[in-house]
Image (cartoon, rainbow, N blue to C red; front, side):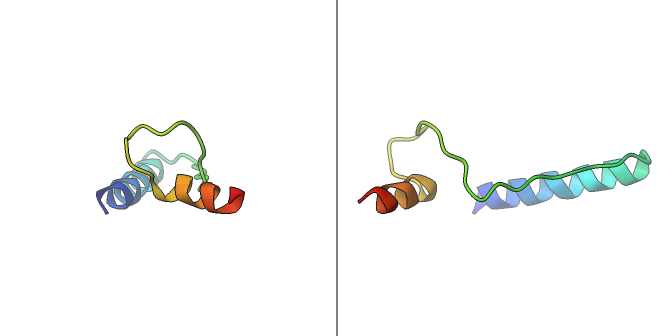
Length: 54
């Protein structure tokens, strides 16, 4: 998906930038981010929570 690609490319760029700038970097990859839906359809994260509740 475009979402996954954008996150992957952003992290690759961050690591490259940090290396060139001789900086340390830490990335955090949460297993799940929960919050209000921004779209009218049920996304994967919300569907997983709904499945746990039901």
